[in-house]
Length: 318
Image (tube, rainbow, N blue to C red; front, side, top):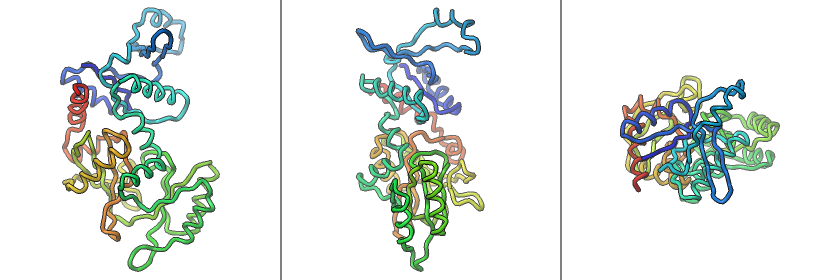
C-alpha cells in the first residue's frame, strides 16, 4: 500500500510516522518538484531527491541520474496543503484535480478545499444543506454592506447590539477577522477592506463564552474541544491565544458536524460551531479542510494521527 502526502507543515510528520508504523509506504511530496508530460500518454511525476539549488551546475548529475516517481501509482493522495497564493500553488491544485479525474483517490478532494477555503462559497453550501450559520451579508459594494449595518437592530431581549464581525473571504488562524460594537467603526473597517481590494463578509456577532471545534474523519466524529478566548480577546481560536478544553460531543452536534463536512465536499475537517443562546440553537462558523491537531490532541488525549491513518488505510482498500 502506497500513500503520498502533500503536507501543510512539519507537524504532518505525525501522519508519516503513524502510517509507516502500520507498514504503509509513505512519500512526502514537496510542492516544487512535480512535473507533467502530455504526449501519447498522460504522466505526472515527482522527483524525489534532496538537492540544493544554490549552484544548479553542481547538481546536474542528480537530475540526469535521478529517479522520477509516477504519482498516479499511489493508492491515495493525502492533500493537507491548502494555500493558493501564486501560480506555483495553482499548478499543484490543477495537477491534483487532473489526478482525481484520472481516478486517484484524493483526501481532502480539491473541491472540498476550494469550497471550504472560500468563506462566501462555503456559507452558500452550508445554507443549501439546511445548516444554520450566523446571519451573513456579503457584497463587493461596501456602501450596501454599510447600510445593512446602519439598518441592523439588536436581536437580544434588551434590543442591544452585541457587535458586528467582519471576515475576509479567505484566510486562516483568525487573521483579518475584526469585531466591533460601533457602527461608525464598522464603516472604517469596511473602508480598510475596500482599500485593499478585499470583500468583507459581514455577520452579526453572536455573544459567547467560547466556541467548539469538532474533528470529523469520514463519517465519524472523533472528538471536540471548547475554544475559549484569551483575556481581552474576542476571538476564540487557539492560534490567537485561546484555551482548549475537551468536551463530550452530543449526538446533535455530531450530526451537524458530519452534515457540514459533507456539504462542503470534505472527508476530514475541523468544524467550528457556536451556541446561539438567543435563538436556542447551534450555528456553524466554518469548516476547516486542514485543521491543526496538536492542541486538540493535548486537550482530548486522542491520537488523531492514528485515527486519520486508520481511515486513510481503509480508503485505500475501498
